Length: 619
Image (cartoon, rainbow, N blue to C red; front, top):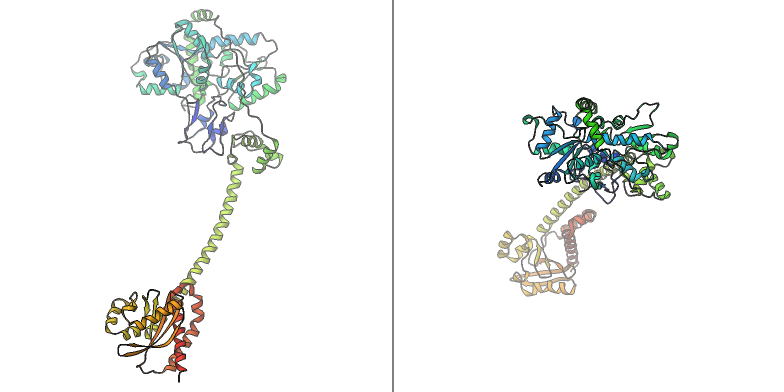
């Protein structure tokens, strides 16, 4: 696992981590669904962890690593940072706290505050022999990483002194043996990364945050209730107990903090630290001071601490703890210990690790600013809600692939408003379309009703027609016939008709003789109508006219019983003609609904009229 990672399953895409990251080590690429931390750019400050309300960002856990060390059989020493008072206010006495740590399996529990005392002495020496070069204190690992990666030109201005953690590791190895394994316990996340880079007698094998220490206490059910007092192992710290405060190391070094005489400016907190480094880089010739920088607002507010009481209660607890430790210390023994370890090599060299990304072309930046709606210079000032200093810096990040345009609140708001406007217009169009569809549906239902009535009328007319009417397909299967035709066929056909109205589907060849159905076969094959053909059917003489309804697919016929007296033939012709004339326009309008049925009906009726008129003209 990298020092810091994002748990995608918990991420809600609020981008709060991106907004607080001072070095933009969290990229939000268009092809990635979730933000991604770039390990080589990360300085381990922990701002993203503190800012994430969903607890989706996690730092590297050392719990398993430390438990493995404790179970290895090696001698393990714990080095405890003086911020314990700010974190463990629920423990009544620090001596019981020391015993709680030993109960985990640590052989020694040492105070990092003694390492602070040694480092403070080195700063006193460095600042007192001023030779024109100004320095930045190197006690905060996040500040050191910030300088090495994003202000590499200032790497040589980092004070060449180890951190209190590394200094105390040297002390423990010298006092208790080079083979002793060391676990540092403190509030800082980047101390984990720092420990990986340390070699030699200052090596630290693992780093636990206070939060991880609490987890171990809970896992092994360790509390102060059943424990006796146990003192820190020698050597004890003195003013180094003030290290949780940003200027505590200066006080431990007896370096003047008087505003008129001090050569050191102290700055703490993300924004102040960033501004300080910019000022040191560009205006040092005017400022002419050393800079004592801490990324957090004092180490008592480090990201490795639990979300406990407010910072002022933490400060009060640390002050009380420091007063108690300083009042109880054996000054003679402390002086002796300080002299014993005075010859330790506490020097440090730093190496530039430039992680700055080359700025994109100006036209690309301007293009993105135009997309964001930032076309005037004053609009490039920005609101800062995206986490970048101004709109231009944000546009650069977008061009570099580190950010998305939707991270700009004004851009997203404008797009949202435009979307709402478009949606409203679309809804209005949909409402009009819906009304039109309802109106069309009403008309369609009315036309369907008219068509249905017309079909019913036609059906009744067909059934009541005095001549026999029949429609058959290309296989001589009856598709439609009226009652008159059924009656002509006889009683057997009438019985079938009761079960299957209109004899639909019946085979014409089984109902009529060959001369009759052969007329249908001829018309289907030749597409030539047969008019007024007399055919014998039993003791009857039938007059048959066969005509095409659909070429080679469907034919119809009018069958007349020649022995039936003609009654009021002229009246029938007149009324049928009127019915056709009155309904012709309606039939045309609803032709798409009537389909084949209406078409066949019209054809049949017209054929009937033609046939009747031809009969009338006969002598």
